[in-house]
Length: 249
Image 1 (cartoon, one colour):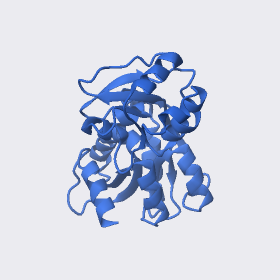
Image 2: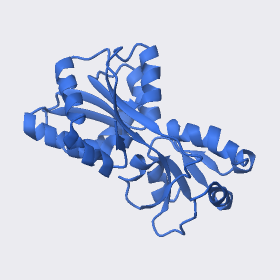
Image 3: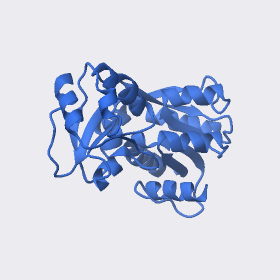
Image 4: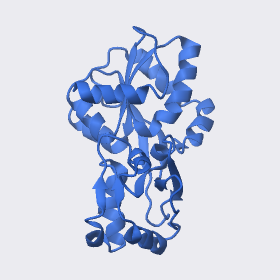
């Protein structure tokens, strides 16, 4: 657990640094919203004086952290994960609110040859030509591994090329050179340096992943959590949400 939390703290440091002892509202959030969190939440904190204690990670990491019982007031994760947490009694019924929607994109290492992925046939060729392909264990990875490559008829041909990236964003694995092509939500790709975002998957194969907020059943500050949710839904937050690769709710 200590190693996992250390990795979360390292990710959090890329957003903003909280003064020692100032942590107040506990939020567990998916990496897909780290960009808009950095801008909207920092502004909110300056305006209201509210302080935050953030845990940010991948779907797999957050599933483990939440189910292990780490205290939190609010979560910001994908709707499928919210459904899981609600079934297991970790999410307060009726507290879910949609934040934004995002599609899946393709990335390569900065400076690498950029493949054509504009059409299903072009994507199929790019995947077959790639030496390695990485995706997450979250919603985008599920869609890629169970829908896209099946529809393209190349699932068997890609078995030895595909890596399920764990413990880090897919884009980080691309930037390190661990995989040649990365498949992940556009909002997850955008904050990572050292990659080139090729573009969205073809519309015929893409899907929309919805992210939302919800109060945990361990919430200690429900009023403060609800005020933050209201702020995230204001019209003033829309440009920031769009800038970070998502369509607002």
